[in-house]
Length: 129
Image (cartoon, rainbow, N blue to C red; front, side):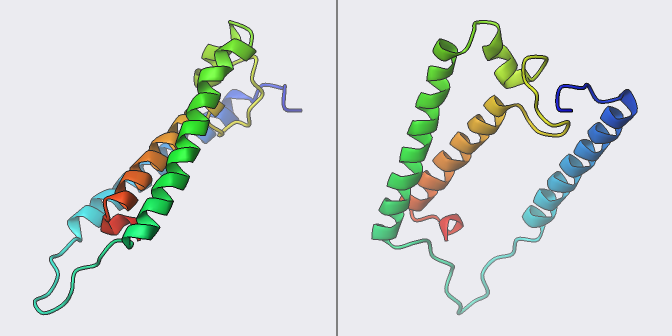
């Protein structure tokens, strides 16, 4: 069942749903950025994690990013030569569900999010709370 290509109508619906989710996500970012307000007078600003917790999170998320990066560097040596580009753009050799991203993109997104969170935690940013 997973090897059967999806009908064009179903593919078009999935793309529309994906675009709608993308627009909704961008709208949330815009609303969040527009709704920021300064801290009222007399109140404390939100603080980030303590030094020990920030370093621990940095080490754990940094280790995760390093391991996943090493895994991605390993992939071209393990897979056949024509398969690795499909790892990032999808295609015939991969049998992924219709609205799932190719595995390479998912891994790269996790690596980038881990690095941003790790650097925020070690820097004591409020976003790391």
